[in-house]
Image: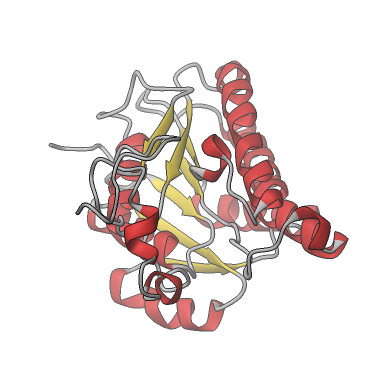
Length: 266
């Protein structure tokens, strides 16, 4: 299927991590002009980008001034921005209940997972209001990366779950606002479950963890970054998802809020 991404300008935030980098490479393979944003791990990201013709950008997305400057640079260089995969975020470790979590960790997690998404969306829509809809009449697209923690909760990660659940409200509201500046623009949210990223893999290697986390899933396996990248690419496509907006798209093997499997029974 032709996804209509050739020469579309797409920003991927949080591309230093496993999911973000895979999203960026998938979009580049589909012919998009990709800007890969990073902050921590940016030097490694910058060294990786040239092999796929991806353009690296560094910015602290918790800083409104840096976000505004990032979008100014992109408009100056590329003329417009057609899509954003707002993927930046952080899953803090170790687990800790609320009463043992410092205010600094609470604030840092909310900033990394919600404030960055809100500022990115503001920067993108401000740029879109300046440039107007794409000349070919197809709409812009914004895709947030959420988490099943925002749907089911996650003990030990209350700030993360709170921030990710807030992305639902952001998605459902912004999809109604964005059409005022681009009548065919779309806003959607992808909620990954357990994904074997470099950051999460050490935890998954602990004996019994995979068996435990898949007990609520009919598809008894941990997902890969490519599973998320394919979903995000679909939602960014002005062809494949032209009539899809305001959707909460969960990619988690059918995860439910109840146990489906007893590891003792196989």
